[in-house]
Length: 258
Image (tube, rainbow, N blue to C red; front, side, top):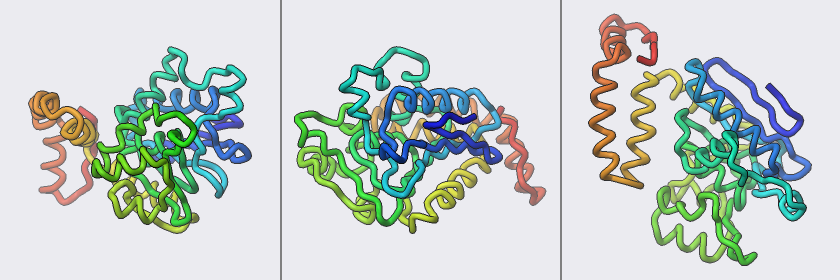
């Protein structure tokens, strides 16, 4: 699937979605948001898709946030109540069913950084810069940036959101926001390596980990309830039996997702 503003490629069990507006620093307009949302929905509905990699074209920016030109002109920039927009919003909150690896080839600010915050893992180019500068424009990061303390220490999250200051990829790694910092040319390959390692694991166990680890930070009581649910589902599954059998037979497991 492709559109001039976004590209979708399937590499085995991994779907790669590329923001393709480099001339606009990959700013988010209505079409791009709808494309992201549609790709998320397709990945969730396809049992053969085990991970999603989100990257961008060009070497200047991963995403500069909302397309202010489109917004000021009255265009829909993701606020409409459509399935695609709702899927995009779930992505920014990290509640997409499929594991997501962000591959930041360049700078990500505002909504661009908020998009990365919805990813489960983040790989960044060593030249990339990041920031939530909304307060410097009389706004605030309203698409997930205020949940930054779910990923990093509270004091640092407050510093970054209250000052709007930028930080380097190295600093992002230091505070635990970014999982790997590599040369720009290695960003996508590194993200694909993470995604393929995730995709090789039992899909039910991966789904349980993704939900429960996030809930343990945001809603510990609900995490405890969901833990009991996932224990019943995963440990009694065919995949659990297959994992044990494959280990004993010294072969790669063949997962069924049930």
